[in-house]
Length: 188
Image (cartoon, rainbow, N blue to C red; front, side, top):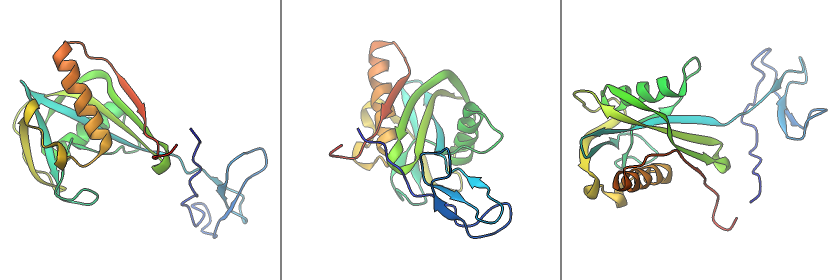
C-alpha cells in the first residue's frame, strides 16, 4: 500500500491573507501551504465524518440523501465533525440533524474506516433510537429497515455498507466489537 499525498487545499493565508506557496517546509517531509509573508504553515488534515447505526428492535434507521454526493440514495445518519465536539457528540448531533432522531450511543466506537485517498475518516457508533424520527434538512426520507430488507444497491457509501454488513454479522453472533478498515484505491 502506498501513502497518498493529497495536494494542499489552502490557497490564502488565514493569518494575513497572502497567497500561499505549496512547498516542503524545512524539517518537514510533505508539501504544505506556507505563507511567504508571515511564514505561517497551514496543515491540511483529514476530515472526520461521524454518525450512528440507529436501531429500534431488529430494525435500522436509514436516511435518503437530499444532497450530493449520493442524492436519492440511502445512508446512515452522518456528517462532518465540528470543532469543539467529541466523536460521540458529533455522531449524536448528526443523527439529530439528519433524522431528527434522539439516540443513546453505545460505546466504544463500532466502525472506523480510514479513506486516505480522499482525506477522510468515517466513524460510526451503534445507537438505540430513543423516540420519533423525521427527515432533516439534508434528508428526503427516513425509514426503519428490517436487517434483511436493506436496499443494498441503493446504499450511498462503501463505509456505510461496511458498517451495516458488520452490524448484521455481529447481530447474528451476538458479539459486537470495533471494526477498523483502510479503504484503498483499486490496484493498490
